[in-house]
Amino acid sequence: MAIMEYLNDTRPEPALLPKCPAKKAVVREICECIVSGIQPLQNVGALQKLGDKKMEWSLYWIEKGFHALENLLKQSAGKYCVGDEITMADLCLVPQVYNAERYNVNMESFPMISRINKDLLQLEAFKISHPSNQIDKE
Image 1 (cartoon, rainbow, N blue to C red):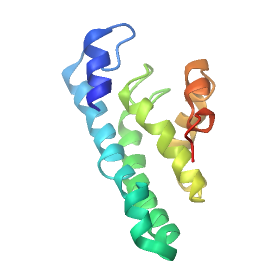
Image 2 (image 1 turned 90 degrees about the vertical axis):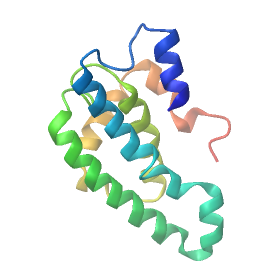
Image 3 (image 1 turned 30 degrees about the horizontal axis):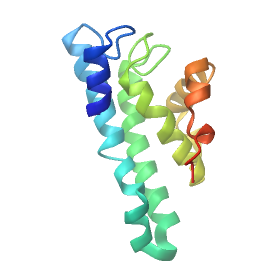
Image 4 (image 1 turned 30 degrees about the vertical axis):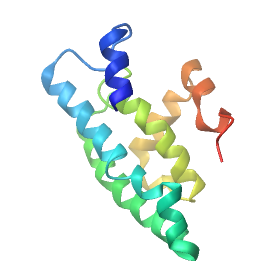
């Protein structure tokens, strides 16, 4: 989050946060749902402690977080997470969906998340930066 905030402050175009304070708060709420409520529970260090329970653990926490996220997106989404402009929320969403797919989350249960992810993956910037295209993806 700190890096995205820095980039938004130092390279204002394209903006990663809306100008409207209320929408900006919604973007940050969605980001925190992902980066604080879902993603840390799938860190390699945490999962190593779980041994053979890591799949069950990951599936539980991703699904729990995605239910909350789906409800947030029902209130805020347009084409993307918050309206029709790409924001920090979208930058957080794509890698978390990739992670969910790694743990065999049934994405049919999350139509809003799936639709937004699909739309984002049509954009060149998201294609080339997708986690599956990174050298350290494992």
